[in-house]
Length: 204
Ligand SMILES: [Zn+2]
Image (tube, rainbow, N blue to C red; front, side, top):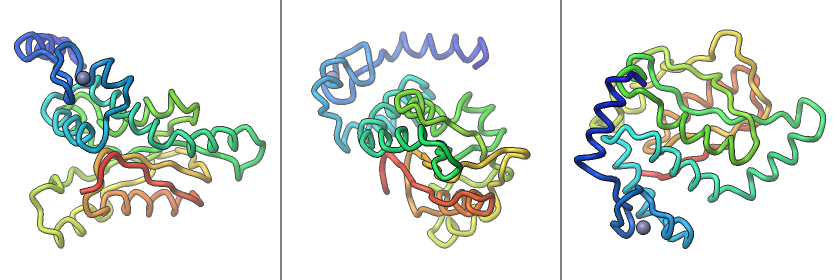
């Protein structure tokens, strides 16, 4: 993130201090007490995702990553154990839905990547940036269902030279029509992935 963006965010945080999305306490987007009591159901996830859209905060993405990790902790632990067994079949990686480089420059980071990095750090399953977005498409929000399904065709590709694990956990923040994930799955399967498990924070 550029120094100017950092200064803008610091000022914005002074004017609009962080507030817990569940209890309203100031200081954090999800306060320690709410985090400890694990009261963060669909409502908290929904509010955090909405907040992430205009706050551009890596901190919110990290909280969402922790929530996603805890939701799938059992599955991720099994993947971690499987990884320790030798052999190509036991090869696991976490991949994420990429954004176009123009969008990356505007936002400063990719939400799905930040969420995925937290899941990778907590689970020990390695992260792979094997997917890239080669076409800067219209945002899916605001398009008709039929347009959403065609908007993303051939928008994603494998990063040149990237290796693809046999088992991939594919992460995105929100699943709407599933068109985005389906396009990513298509690229990963073509590149040799055998099993792909989608993990999203919210559907709809
Ligand atoms: Zn709270």
